[in-house]
Image 1 (tube, rainbow, N blue to C red):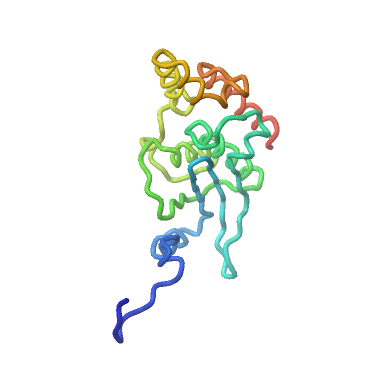
Image 2: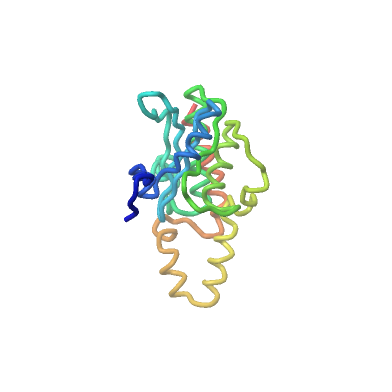
Length: 196
């Protein structure tokens, strides 16, 4: 451990790799509500957070597990689920009177066209203004799951057993891999109908 009169112990959340206080301060200077997108292996979470002197307040939040209420019974860890989670969060934010936000990625590593930007695209499509360049979003066919359909077709032609194993959840929920884009559209319509 470092020693000496000039050594400063880092703040706990910085030492744990959870918070960049410099980045947080720069985001708070905007005075806008933060759009916080976090991912795990099987889940996505999108939150609209307001920073107040006494602590952060979550204005509205959505989780990919909530998509089951709108007809999405598949995994919450892929790009279409991330898009739908963002769309649901955006619709809830609109209902709560939120018009714009600024993206807070935290310390996550990310890549263009990934799940984080798919969720962001969902928020933008729901009508929330976020300062962003459209080039970072996944292609429209990827948002609808066309890439999953191509992978499923390739696996099915090579090895039927592997196909049955990898796409067991699809079969259990009676969803055909080539019908994924229709399921995405159906879920979006269900969100539009139920979330005002």
